[in-house]
Length: 395
Image 1: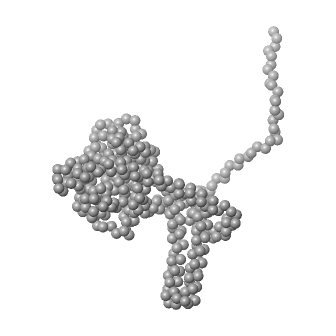
Image 2: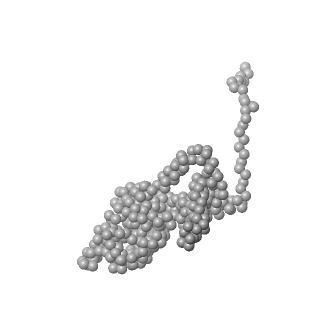
Image 3: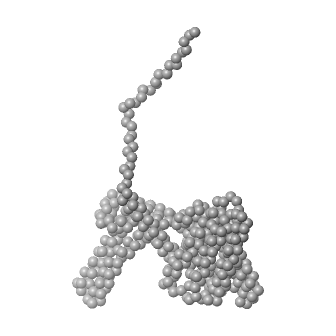
């Protein structure tokens, strides 16, 4: 028999390029444990500083009429993100950005102090001897330092705007070099535009406005009846009953709206009930925190609020309402993830657990019209569901 044919490999059409340069990827050198610890400590410190700056900035917005909707929009966005992911840390939106702006404000404040003291000395010298040499010298020093600080600030902002950039001693020479090099105006314009767009102010305002309108439509009629209770007790009792029912759903309908960005979420009561059935105890805990944190704040509405203290009281309101919003999103996320409802006994435990806090909140709201300095209008200042501010001027 003939021997089996041995297959022959086809000839190579292309000679291998043995002399071709092969890129060599060098592994990164491992960081020293002290370097990793320093970077972690810096990141934690920046995050903590950003949280402080964030709430201070929100309290400033809460003292401005239109800024109040931005503050509400932020709270809704925080609850919506937690409701989508189930992670509490996702509720701290824009902390790093707030740290950047807070650092700029802190650096500018520190730079303003020497100018402030120099202006005091210049004013004192001007009072003693208006045309004297000392007064002219102080005025000259003040103008020179103000001009130098202005250039230094511009250079620090173009570097990146962080605290370490404000401590850079070569900001003014570097700024002069960038002016000679060209393209500085275009770069500065683009950075400012990107920063403003990155804040998403129209988005937060629109979210807060819709969240306000959706909740107010549910609250308006029960609060109207509750306000008429001092003239018509029966209408007051009807309003209290309706308000107690509405309070059970409005926080979680706002969470659903922030989670889906659909205004129809405010009429999807059955959908909220279905989510509650899968996490009744989490819903009960979130509602307890939401209403308990809102009740002590009514004490701040007894007296007329001085304009100089609106900022501080707005900060207090935000510090109380932010955890409530985040916990509402957390409870909704737990219910949305579970496929099956909990046992009926657990569901009834959740329903019975919220009765005391709901009744206490309805009573606190009813009392607020008698102790609040705006009278019946205080009923509509629902900082737990509407604008997170100490007061709303309805008149």
